[in-house]
Image 1 (cartoon, rainbow, N blue to C red):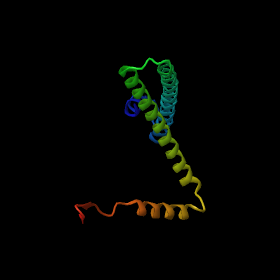
Image 2: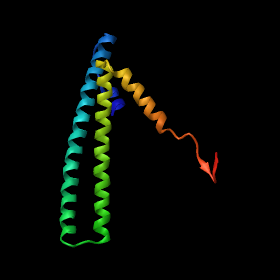
Image 3: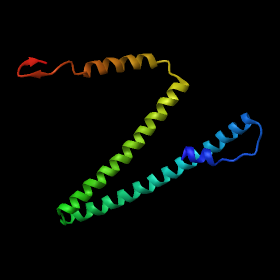
Image 4: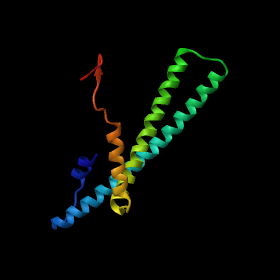
Length: 133
């Protein structure tokens, strides 16, 4: 989308710096528009998945359980989880960017505590038949 938009922008300006800046502005608008469309699509998809899941849960509560319904329910839950996971990654990314921009007086403390936590969780070795390998 980015390369297609960039190549399709046609400006009749002899000032290369001004043309480049204008192209970047147009590209930024297109990217934001694409992101907004994607978010609206995901929001609609989320509502649709929840309504389907609610309908299936009602059928299950009434005793209409079979393998197809359970597989469909499992698939819907997986899709719902994927969307939620994607949203969580987006929020984490935005938070990290905001943290880098604004900074935090306690950031060094928290980073050190994370490093210690990861060091404690690290797998130091594996025992096979009673021997470290």
